[in-house]
Image (tube, rainbow, N blue to C red; front, side, top):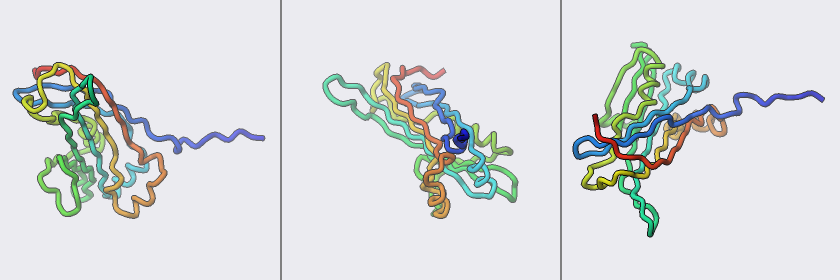
Length: 186
């Protein structure tokens, strides 16, 4: 009898949220987060062929209540579309508060990058995600925050959606819940 190692591809890539911070700037509350992951070779290959991939960052802010379930005070999302532009040999990142569809990009922030590494660094840094106004949320010193980051495979072209089912390489996801102290902006 021989020993058969399990294939390394069967394990999902490690994705973790390395930073999560709430800050108050003026009359608004912002969330800053950092996500760490390595892009699997299969996903990078799809990108090199000019097919866009989509990431979504979701955050919910809660007010804790001792007498009932926590009250959701704010919920926001950031949608990111990463694509390679073969003609210019540059990477383009579109960022929007709403899902980016094939019907058009709508009101998005567009950034171009020379390398995939630079573009992924921008995806991994979720900076100044506006949670809302202090007047709506309240100025409690501590808030419970739930943050989720994921690769959204539902926005891939249909043939890829069928092909990614059950493949660990496409499972880039992380979630973290924490009680955060509201910091003043520097």
